[in-house]
Amino acid sequence: MFYTHAQLDRADHLRKDQAKQNELYAQSNAQLLPVWNGKLLVGEGRDAIPEKLSIPSSHSLTGKDNTIFLGLIGEQPFFALSISSIDENDLTQWTTLAQSIYPEHNNIRFDDLRIIGPTLLADEGALMAYARGIVYWHDTVKFCSSCSRPLHSINAGHIKVCDNDNCKHQAFPRTDPAVIMLVTLPATTDSPALCLLGRNQAWPPGVFSTLAGFVETGESLEQAVQREVFEEANIRTEDVRYIASQPWPFPRSIMLGFEATATTKDITIDPDELEDAQWFNAEQLKTFGTWGDENYEFQLPRPDSIARFLIDRWVNAQ
Ligand SMILES: [Zn+2]
Image (tube, rainbow, N blue to C red; front, side, top):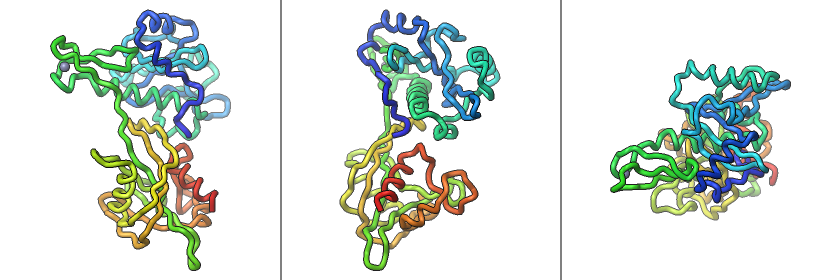
């Protein structure tokens, strides 16, 4: 699944050991992934496709503060570095530095993973997504939720603890569970098997995707699937089946992918949630383009998304 890294060892056992952290950071092969307000450093190689660019820790333009240990890939340590507090104009210091390290690369910049993600190598996209997500937490959780005093990082950036000695509240990175589901209708003598896709009015014209929504307090994942499908499209479902999950740090979700079988067919959309929802068969979906390709009247989600994974999986099974 895209945005999951096959080789990364998060090395939790090395987080508490400050001396070991300093040693890892000082290693000549240690690499930083600078993150500026959700954007990551990329450049284009010979084939003009964006690639992850990391900076050796020895070249960093700032200290070890605001770094978070991501883990090891083989013997190589990787750290995320938040530079969100610097002025946008000062990003050129980082892109100039990167250009000196990567003289063959062009168009070096900080860019949005949501835009460039699908073009990245899977493991590069995964490491960048992890860095983006943990830096988002680092940037946004700065004060104690119990007593409002400042927090400071411990455990290599993976825990924050309150400065107030009478409080010492600890904050941990949070991930919000969201369900995403392909609702299907079995084939009948009159109709091939169908699946339900909807569209949000914020999307480009013609894009259709699976329904999705956040899990609410006190409900199971299966209940969340059935509730969301009913709320958004007025379709009743049964036989909710877990398929796969995908980290989705945009900014801090995990997508939990399901299939469910519809027991009703008549769609009534909730206009606050959806602009349209329709049943499609596999032959129709095979003629769709991909998000952003305006040569196609209908388009499916980007190939890095679990939505697309669920749709392609179903189409291939028909
Ligand atoms: Zn506190």
